[in-house]
Image (cartoon, rainbow, N blue to C red; front, side):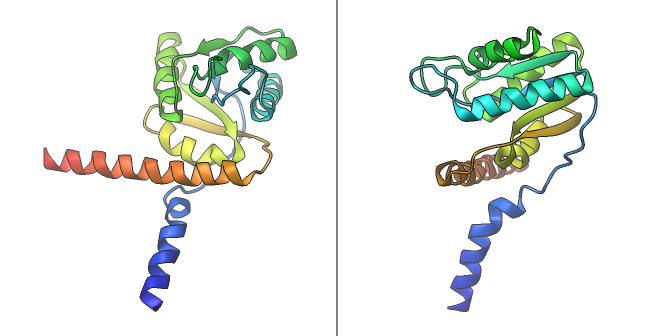
Length: 186
């Protein structure tokens, strides 16, 4: 019985243990990448999108960051996450952001944003996402960028978001373990 309880505890805490906290230092970066999240099905900004964009505007103004990149394609409906967030950002700051609108996952957000960063020779990268998502996003970003500062936006706590993040962490761990084993076979 104790053994089963121990396994259950390890299973429940594994996604937390495997994604250590990242530095939340803030400061100047060459560009700020804002990770996408879906709009409502009618195309209106979701609360999460609005919070991320408003925090991005504050960070860009405070640290005088010259470029902001919004990520996210039409992952969950017919509306480009980057486009919707970018338009709101322009209203807030009068600054035109770069848009990456091909991605459908956090991993792809990083992958396609890296291409933009390479094209413009951005070295020091800021990544902004919601607080509950920061640690997994940081783990993924280290595969694509060398010099990273994470920024987090406030978020509205919902059980659905927490469960989705928890499951996404397991999926990411599974993919990483699978990739690691493939490398060992070669």
